[in-house]
Amino acid sequence: MTSVNPSPTVPREHEIQVRVRYQETDGQGRVHHTNYINYFEVARVEMLRSSGKSYRELESEGIMLVVRQVQCNYYRGAMDDDLLTIKTTVVRAKGVRILHHYEVFVEDQLVADGDTTVAAIDPTGKVVRLPAWLQLDK
Image (tube, rainbow, N blue to C red; front, side, top):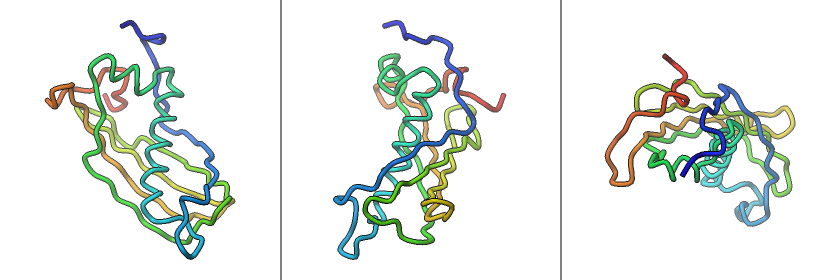
């Protein structure tokens, strides 16, 4: 299958907004800590999409990006209906791995930050090199 955009350009920085849904909160009305990992994934997927290629297209080309490591720091609680701004930065993208850093804000208040490392694998689970267009540190 040929991609719509065979030569995408991945930005080093990307920003999206996500509204907190009621079901993402805990008994105290704050975003449950596990949902920040989901927000990181949403931000990472949208960052890739902004390059002109979707995860679906990447996987149809035989490359899957799987989470190798995730880390999150919590500073204050976001609440139901808060509008989150998630800033994603590619810290490193070389070889088989991409390191992303995330900052989650409500207005100008940092509520959480963290990092993920994703690794490229093929459909059999074998580690493969990132496509050249995904490698930012050459």
